[in-house]
Structure formats: structure tokens, C-alpha cells
Image 1: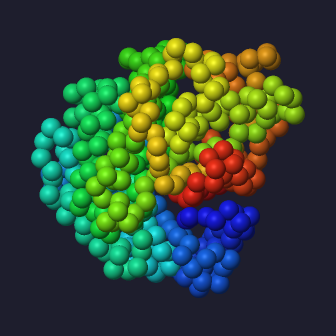
Image 2: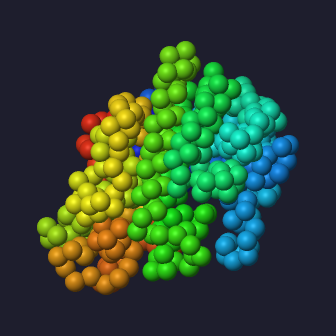
Image 3: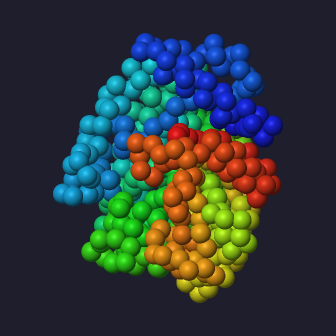
Length: 420
């Protein structure tokens, strides 16, 4: 998954070619021969990915505690079809079969996330669950035995429910100490075999959906953004984001100070990365596209890499944007080793500062005054898919990778998720 930039132009062709091989047969097809003859270098990681809540099941087995998604999905009306992750695909019990399937298809890496509540059912307020540690050790050993590189996400949206109930999780600076403690345990028990760590998966999605629209737990939002019992969509997303950024930096600090030299791994963060295309060639729409990127992805990456929030956010939000202390800013040096890119779709952007703009996603002050949509004035960004928010726009992959390369001085990148 790590891409030298000169190979990026080959990515879409190769991925499309391999995907067509998969779709062209009802039987199992190995990717191994196709990868060995491709334009990718021999150490290229071509893998598959999962998240603990969506895959593991076993939601209260062997000492695991409740997490925020366990509680959320058990509430009536939160999930459209009423399903939950109590069993999921039972990866917890069937991981060996899954690893065997990965070996058969020829992938050489597997990105998975750890369940925080399986390792620390009550966060730092309780004991380490040895059964959870043992499970992940078995999974990692099974992968290594098959020559499959473990690529581990420390948290993928899920946190112990205990932390939500004690201090409202990401709205409290206390979460920084909990995440540091949790990450330290992960590095200690798994870092001898795990060489790629992702602290957070898509923190921008978790914050927006959890604290602005209320579609994800803890379901907090203002009335104008969603149907929630409590919350403040103009204020709370920025509090949660600040605590996530500082939690990421706390984990990086622990890894660099205690483990990285001996374990020889790398640590980064995975962002949901949408390509925003100006709806017109006007200067206003071009500025709006850049502004939207600042309020969506750069919101997290700029502080971690450049030590400050994007200028566009300061200009629009003013004092509503939390300020990092001098002590915090000391942590921003060497904030990551790589950037993970989760790219699925692109959107048009229309300016809402200098132009008349109807209400819609992105048009509010807290979102940057830029309307985003895949369809505008009967013009579509690409072919629609079965998922209403995904559109086929292959140029978006090249555009977003080039954008990140240029903005962040060619920091190593991994395509940690993608699809159309």
C-alpha cells in the first residue's frame, strides 16, 4: 500500500485489472501471479481490510466490555434494518479460515482494527483483559505465519462505553490519557510483529457523524443538523477533534519514546479523503473547494503535520476554533510517519460566501460556507453506485493523492481503503 509517487499513475489501471479478474469468475482466483508480474515493486503491500466492530462479533465473549457501537446499535431506530454487530461475520471465532482465504487470494497484508473494549473493557479504570490480548496475538501470529503483513488500526470508531459514561469520551481532555494508556498496551503486546500502526481511522468522519449530524454514536447534534436529544453542532465537533488530535500525538509520543527504535515500525493516521471539484471555473468556487478540504481533511492533518489549523478555518471560525497551548504545540514535531488515505468518491463544491447558495451539506459556517454535492444543476460528478453517497470518479484518486503529496511535502502515503 505504500506508493512511491511515480507509480501512482499506474494504480487505477492495475487495481481495475485485478478487480475485473475477481469479478470475471465465480471461483477463487489468486492475485499472487498477477501481482508478481505487475508494475509494483516487490515490497508493495496489496491487502484487504476490516474493522473490529463490523467483523469480529463475539460482542461480550471472553471478558470484552460494551463499546459505544454495541450500545448504539441496540437502540431502536438507530440502524435502518435493525441489525447489529453482535455476531457480524464471526471473525473472532473464524479468523483462521479468513487468514487462509487471504493466503489463497494472494494478498500480502491485512489491515484490521483492535477492539478497545476487548483489551480494556473499562479503559484505564479497569484491568487488561488477557483473553483479548491472547486473541489478537493468535490473529497476528496466524498472519505472520502466512507471510501476511499485519497493518493495525488502534481504534476504528469504537471506544469503551465506560469512557462515554464517565466523562463523555472525546468531549473531555481525559480521553487523551486513556488513549495513551491503551496505545502503550497495544505497542507492548503486539509491536514486536506489527510494523504499521494507524492511530485512528477516519477521525473526520467520526467527529462529523458523532457530534455534528448525530448519525453515529454518541449521537450529539443541534436541531438544525439532525435529530438528537443533546449536543451542539457548532461547538462540539471542534472540541472532539482537538482531543483526537492530541490523543494521536500522545500515542505517537509513547511509540517514539519507548518502542519505535527497538520494534522498527511506523505510525500514522488514516483520513477519509474526498476529492472536491469546483463546480465552475470561478475564483469563488475554486476557493470554496480548497476551503472545503480544509474543513474536512486538513482540519486534522494540518495540526499534526504543520502544527496549526488551516488558515481558512481561523478566518471563518475565529474564537470558536480551539487554540492549542504552547505545551501542546511541542508535541506536533514529527507527528506521524505516514498518511493513510481512504478514498471512495468526489463531490462538486459551490461557494456560499460570495454567491447565492441554498441550504445543504457544507453550506453552514461550521462547515466552511461551501455547498457540496455529487450532482449540481443536472450535472453529475460521475456514475452513481448502490451507495447514494459514492460516485465513480477515477480522476479523484490521482487528484487527492497529488494534493496530499504537494501540501505535506511528500510524506509517505498508503491507500488504506478505496473503492468505487
